[in-house]
Amino acid sequence: MVLFLVLGWPAGLLAALERVTVVRVLDGDTCVLADGRRLRLAGIDAPEMAHSGTPAQYYAVEATSRLARLTLGQPLGLALVGEGTDRYGRTLGSLIRPDGTSVAERMLGEGAAYVFWYRDLPRSLVERYLGIQRRAMAAGAGFWPRILALPAPGGAYVGNTASHRFHAPGCPDAGRIGPRNRVVLPTLGEAFGRGYTPARDCTPWPSDRDAGPGKGWNRKWP
Image 1 (cartoon, rainbow, N blue to C red):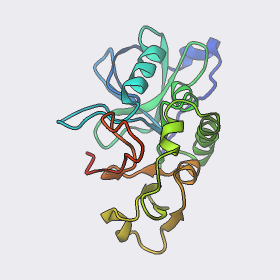
Image 2: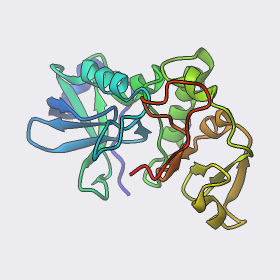
Image 3: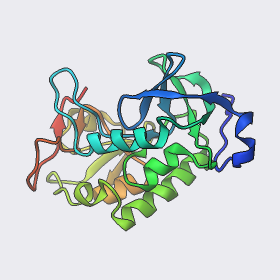
Image 4: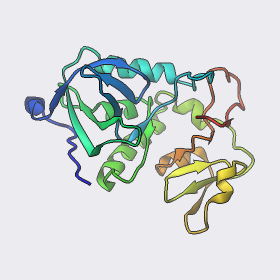
């Protein structure tokens, strides 16, 4: 895969990137460009907004608002990643602000998004993103205090080294991970700290309706 990704791009060289304008923000990791393309920020994921009768996840509104403040009305540079599109046909890339900072890195550093691994991402970028995420976790930025305080689901989490997704021990897909790819992750802090992402169908992420302690493990999240 060809990777064209520039992080910490000097402001004076912003013109070397494709110039784009964001006209709408859909959630904390996806936006719409002026030419109609939907852009998915490469390497990060954010809490899901409400859709199809499913309530918003915790911190989804805040993450969406933060991405809007970082992008709307700003002259931005777009660096495409991998083949330039994901499996849903969305443009896949990184947005660079006029000051040369990466929008994805800002979202990670403020605890408004977390690392989302996939095969197109080079190891150096994953490690860079993970370093930012770990610092945000340690500083208690954004959603991390509540997420890391969620109670364990009665056993260790189960990660898949092939997909970098993790599950609660009682989730159906946890039992289908083969021994070769199976890794035990005792806490949420270790799971996120090692770059694992919650599986969509059985996630620890609470919804905005789950305000009290002990809430989490939404099942069948689309």
